[in-house]
Image (tube, rainbow, N blue to C red):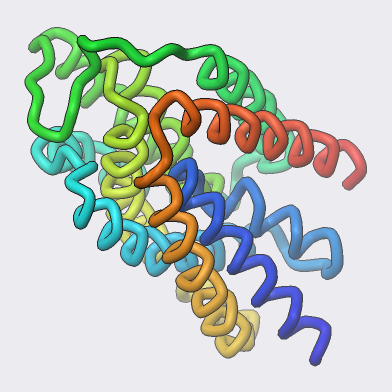
Amino acid sequence: MVSEILIFILAGFATGIITGLVGASAIVVFVPIILLFFNYHIFALIGISLIVDVFVSLFALIIYKKFHNINFKIGFYLSILAILGAVIGSYVSRFLPNTDLLGITALITAFTGIMIYRRKPNLKECTSSCKVSKSKFILAIILSFFVGLFGGGLGSAGGISIFLLLVFLLNFETHVAIGTSIFVMFFVAFFGSIGHIYYLNSINFKWIFLVLAVAGGIIGSFFSSKLANIVPEKNLNKIVGIILFALGILTFVNQIIL
């Protein structure tokens, strides 16, 4: 019991750290940590990780808003289809080959880390109040549906996927891309978690573990979000790149072992 409490707090804290720094969701760190020590069903962990994402992303948003690093208009439009996808994904997730898909997601995360690490800031990057081309904007909205679909299905609130859309399709500045992706992630996680709550109740999951994980996540998110917002973009790209690459490789290795 004591060990389970400590592991859930640690997993939540680690989730908060990576969410605040890179906008990644709980699936890339929370699930691997829990599976390393306990034999939880993957569908249960998907629901738990999504609920953790709701609270962690909410507190990260407060910090990013303070530093004006959220494009609410674009984030709002991306959220609409992402939410629809998340709801659908949350109900069909029990039929998906989660392990294989998590392995593929891990490799994509690692590759993303390399691209972000090598990315150089430029004066034409989109900020919290910029406008983007209509064609790219429409494409981003369409793709956000699939981000939500896989997010609701795999327990990943889609933070990294939205981050990718914002950085490589809409050319967002890194700080704003992270803040806006967390904004979208909050809604994906909230609506995606709804379909999992009944299942968690049906297996008599001890909700105190979730409360502790959320508490750890909020603490980690608070400090890492502040750090991310004061670090220059060039340095932030290096930090984000290294973290994403490490998370991707570790998650992939973890899937092979399991």
